[in-house]
Length: 332
Image (cartoon, rainbow, N blue to C red; front, side):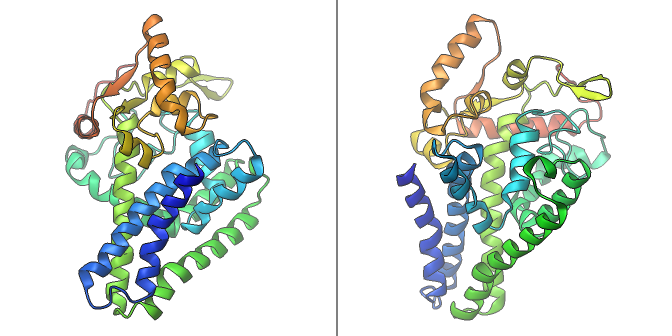
């Protein structure tokens, strides 16, 4: 993990140093290439380092996990919000509409058969990719503020001993720091006009947003997923199946034999193992996978795997098209 951390940080920091060092000032395409590489580095850091750290699996030392987890703030995010959305909501209520915020997105996208259908959704399999690309741009600007307000209303910030005032102050300070180094310094020292710098910044985020969406969306928004409706008991919405079975029926692995791809995205192509064993570092997923598959087969439970990344993306696009139809069948 330390070796990977060093490599991923270099993938992000070296192009940045070249940018503010005016290395690409004489070649706009080289300049924009550096921003593209920074976007790829963002993905590597987020998927391979931050993700494990904020799950508490980067190191057996909790202080190390907490420290490394704050790398998200270096990338412009807010780790408290991330832990609530990802660890608490997504991992507990995967694919449950109204509880899993990963499928609760803008009205232009319908990511569950339980969600309201509009006529324009029939084209979402074509335009969804653009909004996927904008994911981190929205995250770096408005998302953290909106989430903090919503989580305060839902009394979720209190679980992490953070008040709304404290969260807003922290988010603002982190954003100021982020934009100071990622935009102001390149504007001052790159030797490029402001509009080229701004274009590079957008290229970085479009790259990161697209890659991240292509990693996470085929893991859950797939034709095999059940998207169950929760059971309501005493005013609380509960999962119909046992939690482990629910995760199996709503999660998909892909490209299990691609070593470099798995290394780069932090083992998130083994999404089943990650959801069942979120307290284990991703470097162990590949060895866990055959054990999990053997047990699921022994008990007649599903174990969804797509042989390649491309097949997973194609099936996700098919699911987007299915969800774009007015009456999308639900398997639950």
